[in-house]
Length: 110
Length: 120
Image (tube, rainbow over all chains, first blue to last red; front, side):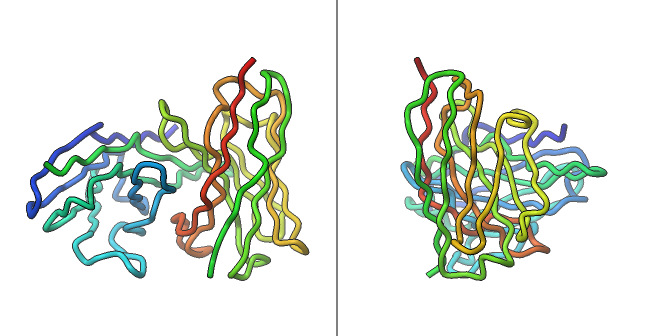
């Protein structure tokens, strides 16, 4: 089955740029979606189809996807961006559909 | 306002059964596929199941195939997940989710979740 790999944790200072990687075999052939989850809350979609921002998501959030790594970039990081971030793809083979999530990255804003 | 509201979570003994529900509102439910995603502290997010807009296609993760059944009632805007032969590892918060569209399967709408605990 398809596997997505994320670093368990990352830290960044306020105002800096956070780049959260999501690794997968030939992931550039798939559409990657990203979620932000704060404690006690449901996940929120922040980027979909590699680089599209849903309505209401700040322009500071952006995505890219190339080779074996997709990346969620958060520019000008704020304290309120501290959260868990998950990547997500759909893996489909003939007659079999599966959803895969990365293990999540806990972003700490120092 | 677009919303999904789960209910029915409970404490169940291993081997037991439980049905959880999801009430949808604020969007064209009859045209929308709906999915269940669960979350445990130890295993992060895990997709569980999905059902097409008319209910004629259903999908399951290997971990629940043969034990869980997803269904929908389009006259009531409701989604159900019947869970049988429950295991301790099924303990999780279960979210009902909706994708952006048929062409973009990102989960843009999430319910608040319902908690299922499997324990003796």
